[in-house]
Image 1 (cartoon, rainbow, N blue to C red):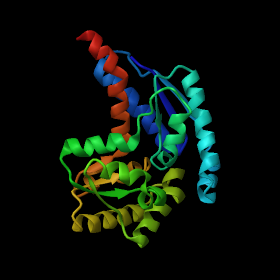
Image 2 (cartoon, rainbow, N blue to C red):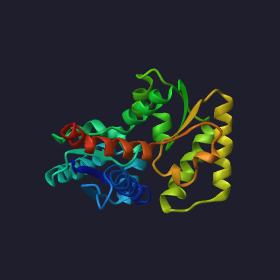
Image 3 (cartoon, rainbow, N blue to C red):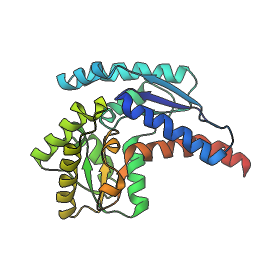
Image 4 (spheres, one colour):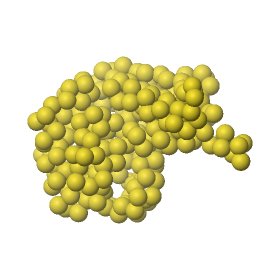
Length: 236
């Protein structure tokens, strides 16, 4: 089994899901008392969020690159950034280490292609919905990406930062998300990407009229598969 490196804390609410899902995935596949080999560095999200707000992505990149180097030094075989938004600086993080970075958008794109969806809606922070660093990685796989209109983007973003990242689950916000999703489905979305690792705390598959692609679960599942590839090959 390979050792999985996690850059977490953005927010810790979703990082706990990564830890749980990865360990559950290892247990499901190997059984018994097996659990995942994980190296986790959890940053202070308040510091990261302040840099996001200030547009100081270089400083944020240096901070997460330092975290990645620590994870690599501790013996991780590959790394995950446990957040969609901070993949904006994934190239800087990947350049700081010699170990592979399992990119969340690539894992999501693979899941979309495997499911046969051609047009999907993307919910996430305003950075993820409005900038190209995430959407372009989906579009290069032939995926048509829809995002909410400006007012709905503000709502989605505000709920993430003011509620979900603080562990607050609000029934009114859930209804607002469901209405936004309904509008995107009306525009032709065949599936919805929960493109922020906290969205799964609010919206479940049963709340969505089309398949809901939870990026936290997708990323964690890909990490489990990668961590066990060496064992599968040995067993074969």
